[in-house]
Image (tube, rainbow, N blue to C red; front, side, top):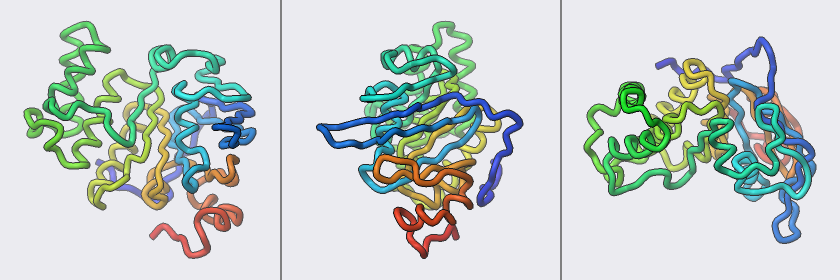
Length: 258
């Protein structure tokens, strides 16, 4: 696997949005969480979403998947106005993949059985299903873990499993919610490598929401910083770190990537 390079920026030959949030506003019990937000996520881009607690990071994921409807604005996925589309249609029509912060697997099933369970839902043809499973097992180096119950896997192994399960449906868009939370340094490095390889080999658009700013910035093409329901900074990791508003509202003056 390729080594992580700090501030690795991918130059897109053509910038083509796969997701657009247009003039989005969201309220929870009269409290405004998102304030007239506009955001484009490009094809084969790794986008990082950062910000303090309660600023709407998870709400953006919920808007994309359909778990939350906006009070105002439109959600465009792959050129289609999807604001009113139900969750199941979004996942199947646009091939969304979601890796939640918690859960996502059945703890009393083995690693292999978790993979098979999802594969049997999405892939009807047996030969194609077995080919996909074997490919994922090799790709994620699961060979020695297949018969281990998921509850006995390490935190990093569980996270790898949930990512692999999300890839069974060959998603075009992968949403990763807090993938680096409560993991050790080596496991985080491993996940960063997996994310970069998915972008290059699978040509997936990836959105990462995490509180681990350094870990996130080391594997994204672009990052946005949210504050008070608005995007206060957007750009490369270098650009958002040096942004004055982002320093004041989120990073602080002493933040650095090393």
